Amino acid sequence: MPELPEVETVKRGLEPFLAGATIEKVILNRPDLRFPFPDNMADRLIGQTIIHVGRRAKYLVLGLSSHEVLLAHLGMSGSFKVGKYVPDAAARVHKQQLSTKHDHVVMQLTHPTQGVVELVYNDPRRFGYMDLIAQGARNKHLDHLGPEPLSNQFNADHLAQRFANKKSPVKTGLLDQRNVAGLGNIYVCEALYEMGIDPFKPMAQLASDYGRDPAQLEGLTQAIKRTLQIAIAAGGSTLKDFKNAQGDLGYFQHQFKVYGREGELCANEGCDTSIERRVQSGRSTFMCPTCQT
Image 1 (cartoon, one colour):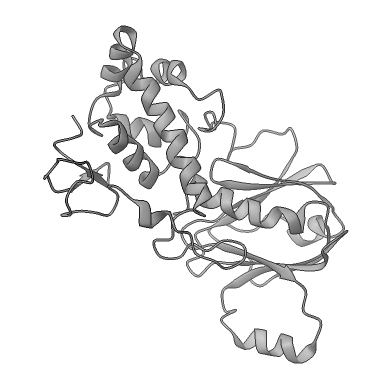
Image 2: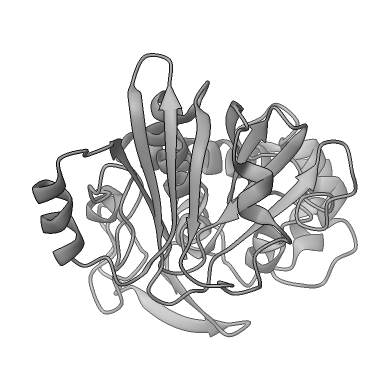
């Protein structure tokens, strides 16, 4: 499932084409994705100008001139494709002969500098979803989320407060979106490995240690930020389905130090231990049992 770097990559690819564009046409090729589309979604979108293109956690957030917000979650296989509208009939016939079976949402927009733009949401597994919510209204998708990990609000003090007296493993705590928004399995595994922290260590132990020696928890927050920034610069990770808004793959998977490397030697110099995969809360956790204690 796309995590923060992948969604941020998509957001950055869409922004030049969508920010300031007016939605002229909306085609919904089915009534639902993971959940039904919002009532009258097409009618509510047509004629609106996209004021802002943003991201919150793993959601794309489009602010509209109607004072509504269009949220989009990519699920496991969802992707947005954006490009100049192709008016030539022959070219469009050729395009339709390509794999458009899972193009569930198609929008035609007019951008002040890009001209006529086509935005397509494709999702073979239909695990993604969209919602339209009034700005400022209660939002079941976003209201419970913790701070963005790249923000100043995400720091060691915040984690120490959230981890205090919690017996659950630190990896579980970092994946809890109430503690920090947007982190997923890949980048948590990578950051914990960088800091040499056992993913199974209780959150309370890290919080308690912080009172005596703040270095480890401070280092963890910085490792998370650093890992995410490097991943964003690489266009995210493509393990199977992920593509950016221009249809390109991400490349951060070529820099994995631990994720998906079960049985391979630890990347730390001087360590001859093999990376292990363990099941934790139903997910694969990759770690070096020697370096992560």
